[in-house]
Length: 417
Image (cartoon, rainbow, N blue to C red):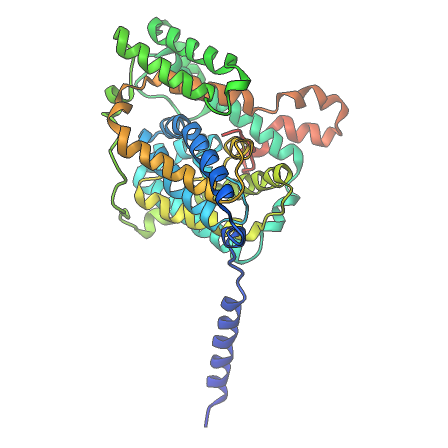
C-alpha cells in the first residue's frame, strides 16, 4: 500500500518529468536541412568563408581589448560561433565575441582574474539556458528603445577610449578600467606617443574607411588593412608592437578543455557580473535575430536562440574562450554574401579553425596598431550618433534615459561587431 507521502513524491517526479519533456528544443538547422540542395550549400559555403575572413581581425581585436590574449577571441568565434549556428533559433545569425562585452569582460578580468572570468562566463551561460527553458525570450521586446540606443552609444565611446593606448602606442603600464580615471591617465601620457605606430594605425583606419564598397563583399576593408599593415611591418621592419612581441604568437590549434578551480567564496561574488553578461548576451542576440528576420523575411525562435547562446557560453570558456553572442554586422555580411541556412555560420567557424591550423605562425607579425584601427572603426559605426539630433523631438523622459546611458546598469546593445 503506497502512503500519501509517497504518492505526493511520485506526483512531483511525474510533474518534473512532464516539464522536462515539454521543453522545446528545436534548432533551426534541422528545419532548414529539409530539402537542402547543392545550390544552397554552395551559397552557404561562399557566405561562410567570407564572414569567417571578416571575423578574423575582429575576434583578435575584441579579445585584446577585453584584456585577454588574441587567440581567446578566435577560440570563441570557432566554438561558440559553431554552436550558436548549429543549435540556434535563427537561420543566418553569426555568433562570436562582440564589442559590447569589452568593457564588462575587461573589468571582471582586472578585478577577479582570468580563471574567475571563465567561471563567470559559464554561470552566464547557465542563466541564458534557464531563460530559454523558462521561455523568457519574448520578454526582451519590452526593453525601452532609449535604453538600447543609449547603451550602444556609451559602449562605442568606451571602446574608442580603450584603443587610445595601442593606437598611439602610449607608454602606460597600468590603465584603469574606469572611464574617467582611464582618460586622465591616457591624457597624462600623450608625450609618450610613438609616431611610427600612429602613422600605421592612421593609414590602416583610412584604408578601412575609404575601401571601395563594391570590393567589400569579397575583400573587406579590415582584411585589406590587416594584410597591408602586416606586410609594411615585415618589409620595412617598422618598430611597432605586434602580436608576437606582446603575446608571443597564437597557438596552432584548439586547446584541451579545462575547468578552473571553483570555490563558493569566488562564485558568490560572480553572480552579479554573470547576470550582466547573460542579460547583455540575451538582448544583443535577440536584437540581432530581429534584424536578421527583416533581412531574410523569416521569424526566429527566441527561446531556442537563448538556449543555444547559453550552451555556447558554457562550452566556449572551457576551451579558453570568452563571452559570445550574435553579432549584427557579421550577420549582415553573412546575409549579403548569400547565406541561406545555419550551415553558413558553421562554415564561418570552420574557416577560422582552418586559418589557425594553417596560418597561426604568421599571426605573430600582425601589428597591434592595425587591430586598434579595426576597433576604432567599430566604435565610429557602432554609436547611435544620429539620435542626438533627434533628442529635442523626443519626449523628455526618453531623452533623459538616452542621454544618461542606463546601459551601465543593464545591458542591451546593438553593435556592429
